[in-house]
Image (tube, helix red, strand yellow):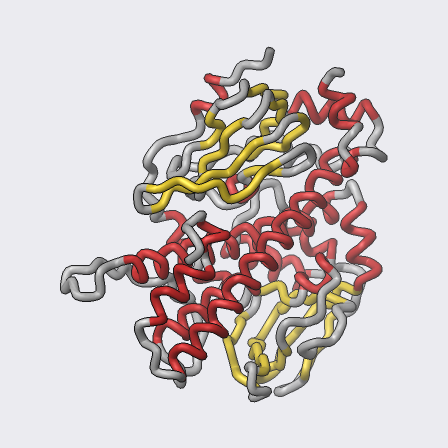
Length: 178
Length: 227
């Protein structure tokens, strides 16, 4: 199976003509990672993004000397999409290939010129949905923390403040729930 | 159209987006008449379905939301040029807050039908809208994550240490006001949530640019050759 076939198999590209997908693979080259390869390192400057075509990856966060897996990433998902739009950021997690992986390498400045390519349109819509989902998820966690925090403050349980923060943010940063 | 182009240019100067021209962004909003509202006009109301997004071309908008006790709270004041109300269209959610004009305001409205057309269009206008919204949300996430990380660092730091480093959480570059009847931590959580909602978007860019570069994943291009 080549990269075009892999792209065609992803729902977001199912209605996109193969010629457009072929152009996409020229603008966004295919890269492959062996199992165990560290694709992104937490703390590194973020300058590219990846669209997963095949394989599984895991996001891992190091915090205070411990490492925890915080999520799995599979075909059709985008990794590090913020790097496409916000220069100067850093990777918030390490990303490691759990199995042999094939991805499209998305670099800022390369694909923006091709707004008439249906594959780009589909990719941008997918980026929008991905970002919106991440915002909603993060916001839900913050609101929960806010609500619990307020209750702790109101009851005078000042000591609870730290534990509340540590309790509600781990699914964003990999810290252990206690 | 001149008004739209001028506002688009100002918006993109404040929030640069690669590959987006002011004319294309203006074109995305170009099929509707500009609406001029008076003081206290409600542009959109909390908990209503999103049927449009808005480009605030002139004036200010006050963002108001009910707290958990049902009391309306003014969260922020957004100044033109700004995009408002897009999250509801992107994920079909209810409005997270109400937007009221603070004084006179000029607004371009993008209805949901035209929005959906633009999302599918392979035109400069469609691409401009998609990319501007992507960039806006990416900034929201980066800024909020930055703030959350700082909160966690503070929560993790020993409270007895007089030398605990407490870097300032990013503040809005303009006219954002938080009500002060809660403790600091509570207000910070609320403010980060507001960043995520997009109400304090302009607080983010400067802080992100100050992030320290440790390494670069530019190596990715060299170390993962195509098989």
